[in-house]
Image 1 (tube, rainbow, N blue to C red):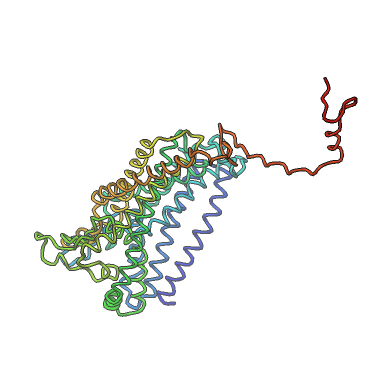
Image 2 (cartoon, rainbow, N blue to C red):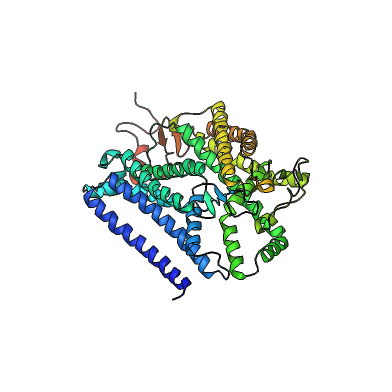
Length: 494
């Protein structure tokens, strides 16, 4: 049996073993020690499944590569490093010509998807396991109150986090022996942060996602901010697709020149797909205005692209990569105003969302235009904070000197984004609010009734009464025209 066949067999066995152990161990812990034990086991299994998935992917690429570098041990070290990179940990590349470690800090935003989902499931299952272990029932009713579970949210969360971090620490120690080594500082900061947030999300969802005493206007502002961010990132994705289509020849040449074999090209395409969310955030930064940095001193934006005078030699030389081949060159005023439609639409959506919530909930009291404008400002600040956070995690370092800075500058993107969405959203929100108020208080049509069909009046929906159809003349109605006894027709009785 060759080395590649043996590696394939080991990868398959590892995957099957992890999946089978997950079900058996969880059922045993539910029966014997639900609560902290279920959380510890769930966190450890979540970390093991994530590591196993990365190991299977890297081993598959290594086995099928026509020019494999190193042995299975090197591939497993790389898998552990990539798993840590998926948690936001910066890596250090030691196999450089100068001997100085070069940082690799750009995290493909699709990599954290698997660890976050596994941690979410582990946190939710830790609470569910305690219910089933104590004879509780699952369902919407059991999520309604924390008292329906025999384990507190803190216990379940601590168990998942500790179990996950125990495996993560072992993976970090193992990865430190490879060519891509995790930074100790980034490991200590990013790994617990992502673990705690994702596990807390799962525990919170298991308890029915309680909102507590969060004011209604805060929820309105948060929903509007999320919609604004979605529009910005979606618009950035459209800009990326358009740039890839416009520079299609350069993108194709970059892919062909980067690697000769079809399998190497497939690997490059896979890496490009993992980086597409990063490119969408970069496109959003381009549409907002500040643009992004593609090297020391080289800034690309809608109002022009250039190199600072103080940049070192070779700062403007980009690495050969398909996504970087689609970076726009010199821009003009027409392009700057053209891409400005992205933040304008985001501001319109944000203001429209706040005004719609203000006039759509009469039971919560009427809002004044000042309050509508204030909530739009709060939502705009939240949108700026969120897009600044995305800009910060979408970039990083890819080396030293000319490759030391890649991606948007988070504070520039956040600040300019707040200006765009607030400047557009406040007028839109106030105008829509005024329009809805005018329609509600408009006087009735001349000759019409004061109460319209389905109109809300003093909290009661009143329906307009339909007029009764006219009846024909009944036989007994004729007696109304006959005189009373003792009276002549036309003569009134005295």
